Image (cartoon, rainbow, N blue to C red; front, side, top):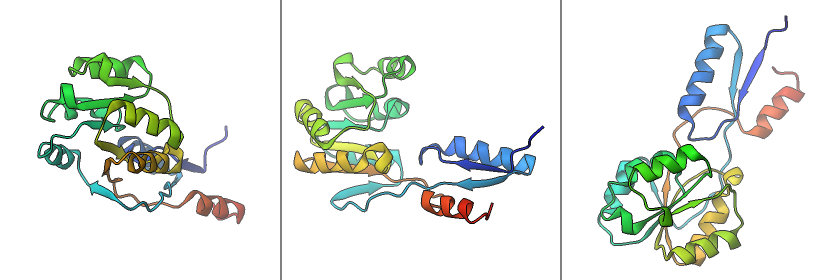
Length: 186
C-alpha cells in the first residue's frame, strides 16, 4: 500500500480546529505537514478586532444596524448585541444546519440571507443597501472568500467595516508551496 508523504492543509483561515486536527494526525503518523496561508489584500478604512467579544462590546456602544457575514457559527454569540433581533442581519451558507442554528438563536427568517458566495461588489452593494445596514461584520477571508468585494461594497455604501482578524498561523503562501513541490523540496 502507498503511504502519504505530504499533507497540504489549505483549509479556511478561520478553521483552526480542522488545521490543528490535520497537523496532529500528521505528527502522529510521521507525515510531513504544510499549511497554506491565504494572502489577504491590505485594505484600509477597516476597524480590526482580534476577538468576537470585542466586536460585540463595540457594537453595544452603537445604535447601528449590522450586516454580518461571519456565518451561522457566530449567530449565537451575536445574540449578545443589544436589540439583535431588530439590528442584526446574517448572511449565511444555504444549509439546513446553519439556518436551524440561526433560528434557534432567535433570529427572524426575514433577517437571514442564505446564499453561497463569494459575490461581486455589485451584488454585495445591492444587498447591503437593501438591508439598510450601517456596519459590515466580516472575516478577512482573502480573495477566495470575496473579502475585497465585500469591503469595497461596504465603503461604497458608507458603511463602517469591522473585521474579525485572522488567527495567527504559520505556513507558506500557495505560490511558495507550489515552488517547493516543483523544486522537489518535498
